[in-house]
Length: 325
Figure 1 (cartoon, helix red, strand yellow):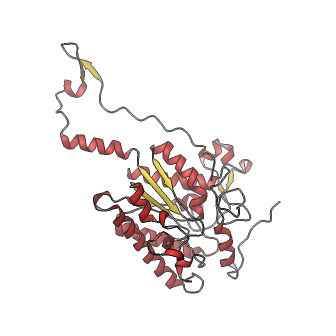
Figure 2 (cartoon, one colour):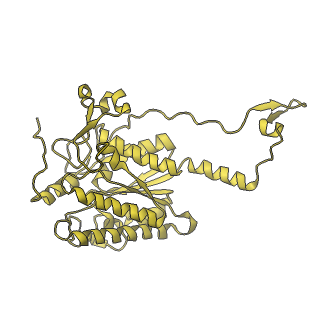
Figure 3 (tube, helix red, strand yellow):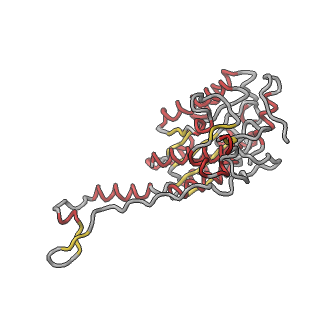
């Protein structure tokens, strides 16, 4: 039996977080339900005096669709299959397969992911060179130019301990206001580079994923989420409050290892890990930050086991993209 994890003093918290966030682990399948069939557009077909098929709109004398209407219908049909680019840190690394499966199943989305464990916003900026953990070919701007996505989903816990060189040694523990100022500046810069790479009217919508409760530095994640929300407002982006799905209903920023099973989880026992109690595990007892229920490994990977927290996060992101499409 593994030793149960508990939050201790601030001393050593940064080292613990660094060790945990370097590893990550996906879900071989989303385990979700099949989407409902889409309604068929248009009315019924009736027979005219000549026996030819005639839509109800023609029978009632409704005008034929204009070119503007046809353009809107075509655009709506195209947006039913959005193209999504997913970038982020070890949380994105462990989520990526489940998110891709849900986006494809629910929205028919085309999908590309390029997460790197241990990273933060500045790692995906152009011009960081050897100070970045992300290679040039996978920088946000490079991928936007190559993939031409409709949505760029960004999921970052918020590197707080200075692991990645692009943070220039700025950490939450040593210089909190400087850390937040830098994080906000990097959010603006990354949004600017993504939009510039797309050019013109083809800019993707940026989806900022709000993070779940942080057991080590609870106020930090609240302020990081505030930066994401402010940047979304400033640049026409979106927020996906995935963090709410892995927090107690009445305590958005209170960390919990287990939560009550959702209706879906209760019907699917693999996702309701403590069925007798009606609760499910979000974290392993020895890893309070990740949501993969498999042990972390030296080499980062998508999570290999069904994990309720990952499914909840993926569902929240998929919902945000679907609502905007």
